[in-house]
Amino acid sequence: MEQQSEISDNMRGVLIDWIIEVHDKFELKEETLFLTVNLLDRFLEKQVVAKNKLQVVGLVAFLIAGKYEEIAPSFMLFVVIIYIYQLEELSFFLIELCLVEYEMLKYPPSFMAAAAIYTAHCTLYGVKEWSRTCEWHTEDSLIVKLIVSYHEKAKTGGLIRVHNKYNTSKFAYVAKVEPPYFLVQHS
Image (cartoon, rainbow, N blue to C red):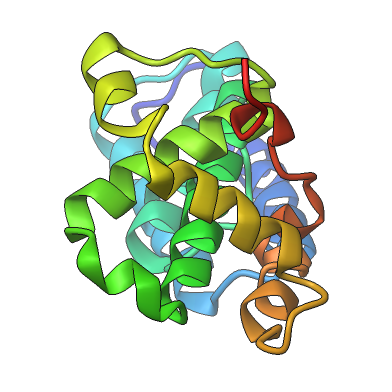
């Protein structure tokens, strides 16, 4: 801290106090907090930081520590990341619905994955928007129609553990999303 011209020990303490509050709110691991402070102090030792940039430096240290220590970080940085997270979780939900279906064994895993991602994308965005290659492999195929049917019966069928698993905040409640019926309608 001796080399810092605009930042005082007290300002560092206020920043760490705020980080502790955020850390507690998100119920993160203790290791994340300790690594955050360690990263912050190591950076402050090497680099002069302007007063108006101190909180940014603390936040970056916090995010790096969270990325390193947390398996599933509890924070979402941007709206785009939320959509990507929902797309990922919905894709996993759909592919897990396929795991229990015997008729899906005939499809290569890569086709199932592509079809699940395509179906999830259509579900979230409400449009058939995909590259021509992916459309050729998935859009008009039986596999997408099967995935939509599994999604439709997920909460009422006999095997509902996948639905129950993805109907939680941990998985962004993606099981509540309505299936993309427009993918199975005849044109």
